Length: 232
Image (cartoon, rainbow, N blue to C red; front, top):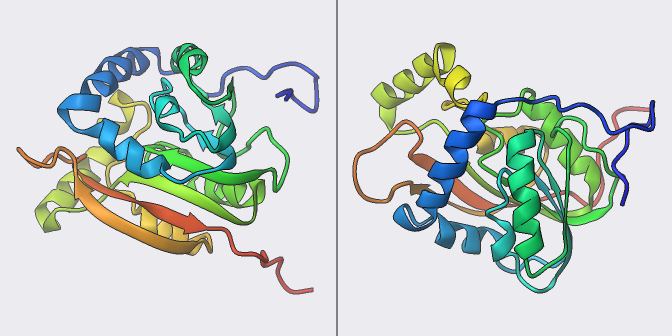
C-alpha cells in the first residue's frame, strides 16, 4: 500500500516533531508495560479484533505484539519521526503484518471505508483537532466497523479537574508532545456520532498516588451502518 501525497507524489514532511518527548516517551512507555500493567490493558484493548485494522498514533509500536492472529493487516499511522522509527522496528517483530506510515489523525492517508477496525491508544489527548480526527476515523471505517479506544482524560473531582485544566493552559502540552489532560473522550465520541459499546473507567496506575494522567477509559465504539450526510 502506498502512502503518498496526492499533490506532489512525494512522501510529505513530518507535521509533528517532538524529539525530546519521543525519547522520554520511548523509555517511560516500555517501563509502564509491566510496572503499570499496560501490557494487560493492551491485551484487553485489542482482544477479538480481526480483518484490516488502522491504528492512529502508533507511537513506538507497543501495541503490535498484542494484536490477535485473526488480524490480517495493521496500518499504523505515526506522525513523529523518532517514534515512527521505533514502530518500524516493532513491526518487524510482530506476528501479524504491520505497515507503518507517516500521517496525522486529521488527514489519514488511506481510502474511505477500507478498514474493519480502528484503534486509538493514548492519542485523542494530543491530536490538534479531535472532531476532525474522529470524522476521519468514521470515514476510513467500513459501515459497522469497530473503534477500540484507551484514553486518559478529565477526572478525580473538582480539585483534580481544575489542576488538569490549569496544566493544559500552561506547561503540560509543551512538555508532553501536545498532550492535554482535561479532554473528555467519551463525549467527543458521542458528538462524532459513534455508537458507544461497552467501556470501563480505570486508574493508571491502579494503586498508588492519583496523578493528572491517572483517569482513563477503555472500551469500544461502532461506526453506524449509515452515515448522516446532511439535508439535501
